[in-house]
Length: 254
Image (tube, rainbow, N blue to C red; front, side):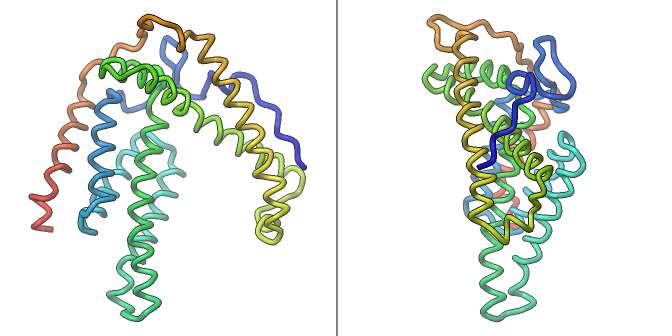
């Protein structure tokens, strides 16, 4: 069984990119997490609800714009390729009205909605600092038993992805390519999944220890370093959320 890769210094508490006074990476969209949460909720209710396919396509374009503003070019290219291919497959029953065409169209219909929803969630996670999220939840008067697990879980996803990338790099250095994993799935599970799970368990313990050291489990009200202010980005996101929430009205003309 392959051993999990050694963690690089500062993986848990540091990330590349511009940083604030507290050392946290700065997102390009300087918006209050509460504004992002509102947009995220409105989009997910529409996408996973009964919004028509054209409205889902419009929300997919909105998600692409948000990703383009705050993510690398290759991330935007991957998102565009996936959603574009699924959108074409959704239209497949109009061009190929047979059993296989209808089946692919129905499957792609739900895959497109899941892809847009997951992409918006990933955008929120990658553009929101944990400290800003804690400050927003504190302003919302949420109980501590809810905010602390959410903060630890919120930080765990990037760490788990970093661990998976490290394991895949180690496998490539040892000569295991992607085709080998497809040809030998059981061997791939042993060499990929097991080290990732072991590294993720270790990361979870380290994150819990870091949270305790920072006093997240202590009594009293914690000190809030991030000062949340309503800015132009928040105004734009609120207007966007209001426009999307009015979809049942303007959706009649789509």
